[in-house]
Length: 399
Image (cartoon, rainbow, N blue to C red; front, side, top):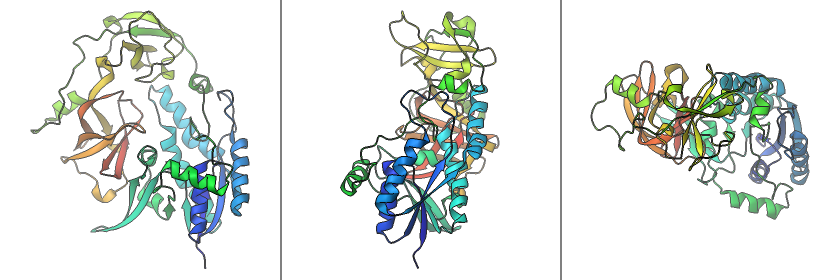
């Protein structure tokens, strides 16, 4: 009897080829299209909502001769992903909805829906790999980077659990994007030349301030330009070679102290919660030799701090802190205990090259110290740590 697999058919080329690959391997394949968002407020002109996606999914299903079902998960998506987004932005942090969407929807609600209809496996078009290995603690799932390092999407799965990876397949994880496009072209799939989706998971490309104004009020405030003075600590390259005190860890991970009196008012904005560290677009200020970048936000005082130039000291920090309750291990058998230190490779955003770092586990949380100071460490985003090509765990950046 054939094993049944439900593929999250999104209307894109990756999930389309994933479905074909599984059918070629002899699985009974069924497509499931998720409707997770209905509201078009804030969508940029020309960015189509789900109706265009489902049309492409239907064309692929007909071509591959597989059944396609739809499920509306918009209530769960709003509650578990979008409301979280609004809450985080309102608190002055920058969330990653794609990471939350995978944890809360694709590998939770979607999986439950698939299993209602008798699926043995679920599959997506993510560029990553899921391998099983035997350890002293038993059999575990190993979440590995995709073979195409330019498209590796393992970071977006940094919050999933061992349980969520059970019976999950990533058929395109061992392929490159050009190879996937070529397969789709050879098969004559409608998605072969369709552009990859961009923007917020299942919402699309949005004008973020307009989108956030559904719940967050626009409020005019000051943009304070801070000169790149000696007040910004510049740590030397390299990892600590000798024991580090807890006080030193706090110093290396502490955000820069920013005060209005240290700079000059350079302009006005419409709400500090609409901006994020490292952002350039939207400041709309001229007259400077180099572009201005956001180096900090204060939502309580509604102030944006900006600095001139990409090398401004306020953009760089030696480390970051993750609270203990925010630490998540995919490989629970490898979880660190307070007092342990380990060298791993870490990234703090999608597509960032992995950075050499040391994680110091303490009772209050993890201090992550980088070999080289990192640009744009952003509260609310996720730091994910790897051992080689395996993603081991992650945590939300505290501040």
